[in-house]
Length: 535
Image (cartoon, rainbow, N blue to C red):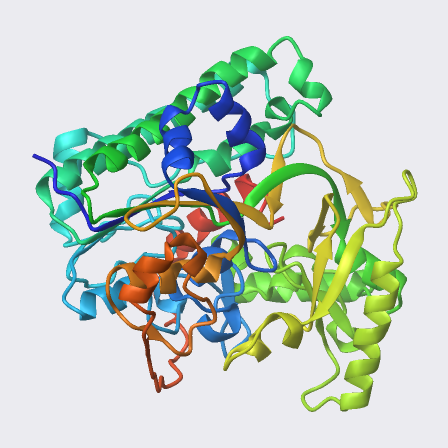
């Protein structure tokens, strides 16, 4: 007999109503349609920028990156090297830590940034970016072996090497979709097994197949795209729907299992849309005379020296991000350089103690120049708005984020990739893939919620305080999110008003350097590269 959690959270990584609504209306996702009818739904605003590690960390903490310390998939250590983020990079208590410390039983299945797993009152099977073949991806440690004994091979995520950014032959594409379906099927089976064997008060499962599919096949799913009408497109969509149907079945399982006092939440970390052109930030900065390239002799000396310091396998993780992706930068004569693709920002290099006026002046110049940038082919503006980091982030870790954050218009993506000879600042993207948008999804069903209700202004930081509220716990007053009171009937709110608790949280240290081995770090790099997150 399966055990009903008091609160269940289902994550559709990269979920967007732009795809889900038509499929619901066509009867392809009956349980999601039931959730919409019986509960409340809405658009869920993601973090700026809307990238997986930043967004799921804000979900987990109810806080912005300036308070939890995760600005992307990597973090810069005190010696200037780059380390991939892990659960230890989140430098403030998570929702599951708070629940566990209050004596509630917690279950996490494939939630991003939960590796290495915390020792909680319950269980954890970690999510992306868990290294392949990691022996310690579950807590208790023996749980993963128990799952393998029951289910056979269980994979946290798939290798998609060589697929991103190119046209994939049909046979290869169908085989890839088959593997994604099998991964999702195993995830559903693991969920059923854990529900039966491990009682929880709070349970969360995240399905990543939706994100991977949309990264690779968006233009076959969007009727506005020419590829949607290609002869092979219906065959792709039929296979794609098998994975979404499995995700829908797991959602239905939790809806059926939920008792009279239970809640089910559906969330995504971000939305999705077409990816048409890359904006090469470092190339553009050179055109603005804010960045210099090394001479051929200096470049050869620089690369040779670094190859001597680090072996080839470790080089791509150990170098500063801008140098890794574009070794031509002459750092002595550079005032600005791009952050990584998942930061969508620019860092300023004006010395250790820059003059405030010079800093503000350069930020202002970047804002004016970037917002006036046009696509030479279409005349469309590339960047919608430019924000100073203080406008986006707040808290003790603000200084670790980029100095300015770029919010691109639809179809454009700021990247730190190295540029090719004679290339401009915009590069057309090959392949059929899509990429992230700020507009994700949210839905909630449970006692006191309004059937068929609409959520108009929900943010991903609002989920942690809302879940604490429905579980009867006070909300820490340093959370940036709010309880989504519009979800609930007035009678419930009057009977159970929102409570807050004061927190005096000391600043935590950065993640230790030895979370990942060199081989683990290389494997993570290759997975991120395969879906276009690094160049």
